[in-house]
Length: 377
Image (tube, rainbow, N blue to C red; front, side, top):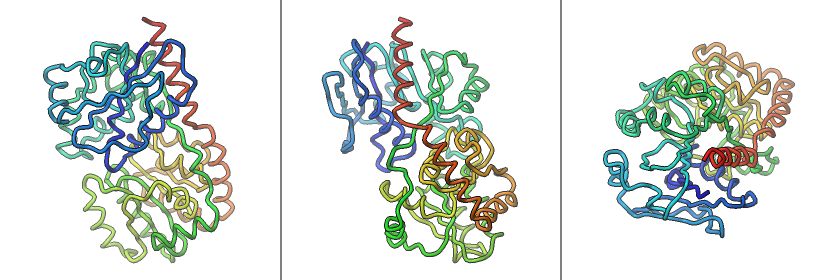
């Protein structure tokens, strides 16, 4: 069986969680021992883009196919003409795998990963351009004709069944993993990252896209209630309506203790997590939630919203809060500060729980799904 692996998400200039998911999952998949009778074709559209250095290399069971159509033209052709077929661009295939919802035209069995249905549940958190993009992809019809859908959590699986009426037997839950680079940093590493980003003293950390869906505004309101000298570090790329969040922080009575960082280099993230008093991630809605998992792997206490999937990630290793209750978020932050034993307990539990989530296991589950697809032919 020949499977096309869509690596278009890896071409993002500033990689999001989906781009990192694609890179790490497919790397783990292609590092597995080759399966007899199965090979892979990597597809991307490289028009006007520099290919990233970490693209999987060609191998006896791995080919690379890079088309060079203008991206808007190719997406429009996929969406409105149903041509060209993806298998035609890759010299043939028996199945297609999309690591994220995307424009595609194919007559072959399709497997697609869905990270969340936030665009269905909370359309107000998306720009008009983002909402149009999702409408043009037509995710409901795409997934209803897919051979299998991959959900990154049980919560996302439930959403898919309830929102799109998908057959639960055709949905496989495959959690993301966390790499070995996320581990407790030493004192020298933590001091180095503090100096690099100008951080001094104790701080709470938020790491992720800066946008309303992540409830960064609620986090700032909760931080306002703490007092003291502890700082709040908000790190990540700017998202939809982020200006409202920056204005809120500027008006905060604790404004001088709130620090915004842009996107943090991947290599600095483990030390940034490790040096924090806790990661606070009170998101309103998540399909999975990578930052809490990465923080737990670094031995950092996590405070997460109990809505959506974050309970699946943190389990009993994190403090669960109502994301709509600012007082509850503030109380959890205060508890971590005032009870050092609680932080140590959560840090230890977090490392144990994070060890269950590996990219090798994620790749093995995807491999088994391809085997089911092959057996169904």
